[in-house]
Length: 64
Length: 245
Length: 219
Image (tube, rainbow over all chains, first blue to last red; front, side, top):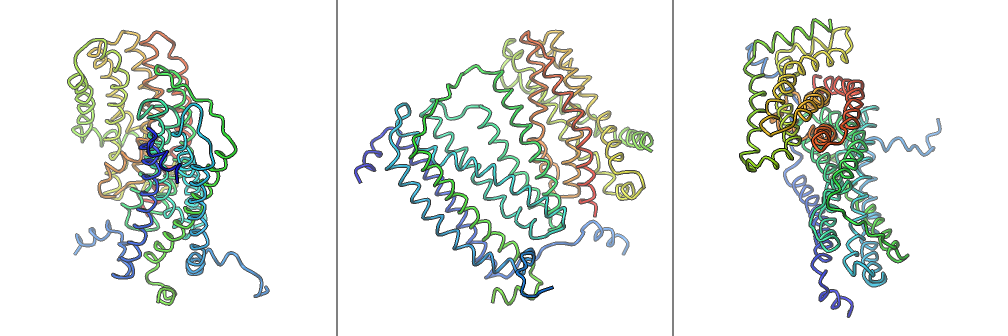
């Protein structure tokens, strides 16, 4: 892999590897966050979504 | 009505789309990984050294696809959101929500890689040229969409509000781009000489392979995410218990 | 009905004068912060004046956006207004006009005074006023889309800023570009014409998006 050694000594190496490094890091992070989401779902069950209209709820409280 | 006729419309229902998406994910993820490796190989071992920029131009192989993905995914997101709003199709809106983080990440990648390419090529980390500035604004549009949807509790209101925002954004992107371009041309103090860049066929090939890899990756990731969105929103549905058992 | 709605909003705003004046003072303070942060050299100030005045106008406009629909949403009047046979488009236009008169026009009137602080020439001051006159209605009407989308949400103010600032950018570019052109001696005509075009287009299309967003938020 002589070419890789060549790149390591090239003055642009930091930028090139930095770019590809950041790219794959972020893409891996995205996949990781997805797996995390799956883990949360299967472990704790589906989260409760608040689909109530909170505005009317407070006015109901005022009436009572 | 023949029952044996293949009905594509049934996949508009989350219940049917969920298992289909599950089967499709590996079909896109594995080729994507292969194409990433292939693209990197062509980009680093086949494409020649550039006469002007040396090796640093190789950053473009990932920068250009990332920028295009950011833009295409935004338009796709707006289309899905609009369809979901116009036809009251929940799954379409869920797709829009699923696309948004991937699009934002690609836009961010294109900004970072663009900056890292600009440093050796132009000598500066950031320039306010039309394309970079418009990409930054595109990132803001993505963040706005994601923030709006995550601060609305009611899922249907979040879907529709996101649709309005995405459609307004999509109409504004050309306006923003041209206004920034004009602004830039009038403030042309530090002239950035656009390198007339001769693309060898192997360079174009590397870029194309990596672009395809990004598309396949995006499809796989979006399908996975929309499955989780379906699970989170359709919790009451009986089919879900069977499907995830 | 249109006139009545505008008048009603004006009277309601008059009763809450403090809110309106707060926006104006925010504008004045923000503009005054820049020389304090950058330094009092005349040449520097003259260069940054167009941008500073316009950015401050943008920020002040954004702060006031919650007021377009916020109060009516909280006491239920907004729902009633949407239920009337009047098209929601006109309701939105009326409220935006009232908001513009109350929140934006004071900015336009005080801007020349602030421009003098930055050493702008008479020509520059005139163009500041004209560009703001053309641009602030655009800010109001585009801002109304953001205000309608974020009705009743927690942290709505910050969210509106996030949504609306990218859409404000062309207005900022054309508005401060016009002032800068007049300061450097070239003609601001092209910039002002573009601002005018934006004004017409946004007045025609944005209220439609706002009324759609209102229906989404109110249901």
